[in-house]
Structures are given as C-alpha cells and as structure tokens.
Amino acid sequence: MASTDHTPDIVETQRDWNRTYTALAQAPAAGNTALRRRLIGLSRRLFQHVPRTQLADLRRRTEERS
Image 1 (cartoon, rainbow, N blue to C red):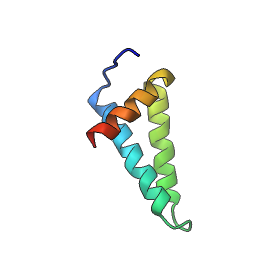
Image 2: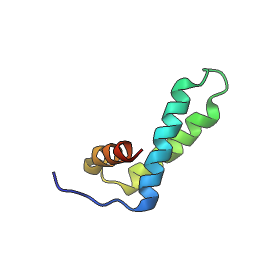
Image 3: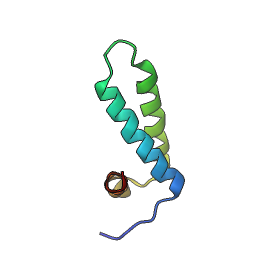
C-alpha cells in the first residue's frame, strides 16, 4: 500500500474522533447527545477530506502515535 501524508489538521480531527468515540462508548445512554453530535460532525469532516481508501491508514497512524 502506498504511504500517504495527511495534513496535521486531518490527523488531529482523527484523534478527536478517536477520543470522542471512546468517551461515547463509556458515557451513560442518557445525556450523550453532545458526544453523538460531535462524532457526527467529525465523521463528516473526515469523509469530506479523506478518500475512503486512505481512512484505514489514517486511523492506524493516529493509533500508533497516541
């Protein structure tokens, strides 16, 4: 697979997505609307700026550096 360079803002968006997803998984069902909305917004940004074929690479890279 070809190596891809992602812009720092997209890498940070993916890290925010990871943190938000973890927080949502640990949050009680009641009152997690803000986390769900944040996750949707972050997902939208990633979907618009990262080709689908590069999403797995981006996720792997952000997990390695965390």
